[in-house]
Image 1 (cartoon, rainbow, N blue to C red):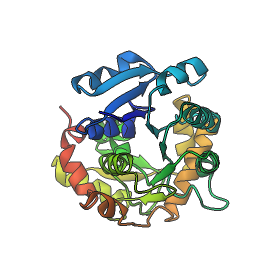
Image 2: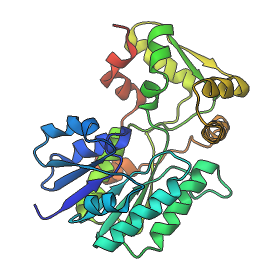
Image 3: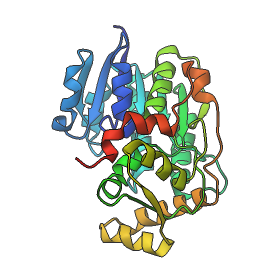
Length: 291
């Protein structure tokens, strides 16, 4: 094994999938985690090592990056995420990393775009000018978000609360993002590219509710939440104002249909079609059914 690939943010939705995808490859994988305990799930993979990363401590980053040949870079959703991204890129350059694959977001290059996109674009531009070979992945909203953020209300109330109206989104399974990442990290044929990743279809939340109803065998309904009610709900969970504003802005553009574009990039790179929401729901049916 001559390659060592570091995955930052390894315990998140995409990071977890990337670790699993790379675990079957002939490479060493270094899972960058905020806490070693949170990375215990990766110990089952013989080619995966854990490394604790503290973004505020340069010495922590140096330990994590030393000996690494490629990086799958995920930054946390924080107000200083651009500064963190730049710090990671600088460290990668310092130790001689030969490829960075950055997880960005669909629409990051839009002008003027939304705040989430502008944060990603600033980090992208810093990477582009760094001199380190790079590839950027720009996925749409994750299918897994319906488990992470709506799972409880789906299971206990049979309802999905979202302020998206009838807006359609080409949701993508994080498994497919990881499948693309695996190819990009192990083949190096995509230097300098920004890849737009989507699911194979654009669907509304009402259609999502219909699919989940069929999979779970019970009625799941979509409740279109007014924006102000959505703001109050997020604020009641003690989310900071900057995060609430950014998430509501994202919801506004999704409601307006700006997340409905569909690409064939997943199929072109992996050789198989991106998963439909119905396939995702079937694979994760246990997450939508009360025990």
